Image (cartoon, rainbow, N blue to C red; front, side, top):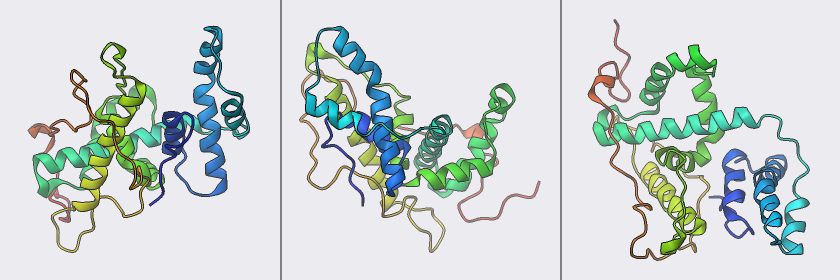
Length: 245
């Protein structure tokens, strides 16, 4: 499995770059690195406004990777978060009723729930577009599921020693919980494969989370997720043909 770039000067930005550009070919790698610089441009500007500086070697490392155009970034954001929402729904279905847990049912729910958004915002929300998103982002789906479960809520509490690095570490723990679950759990039908494939981006065998300190927020775990009963009525057990209505 490919290992997340946690050894970079700014590991959160580097990891987010991989989450948006998860391919392992040279172009995807360059775009992931370019996104890292794109993401860091404002924080670097604020850093210098406050009279602080990055080291020359760190700044050179970032600037030399900033050359690629990110022309489809908006589409990638949608596809990535859509994939995260799909896997979040698969996980919630599994916790609600394992017989209903499948990517197909997750896509069915996502399509139904986004129909109103489609009319209001014109965002793509068809089944085929969800499947296209899943194909592109399956290797980082667990990271995006953790992102969506958090509802993009990243926080720091410096007064208790919970900084951005600690919060990022807890986010990685959450993504690893989803990854291990997805690679070891499967739909209830016979001869099914696990929800997630073997080759996923992950933290690496040598990575260890920070030791939790007293007073830290309730992060580094996955909350109880379930799907309301009213949304389950039109779903079929995994592997069954659709209802004829």
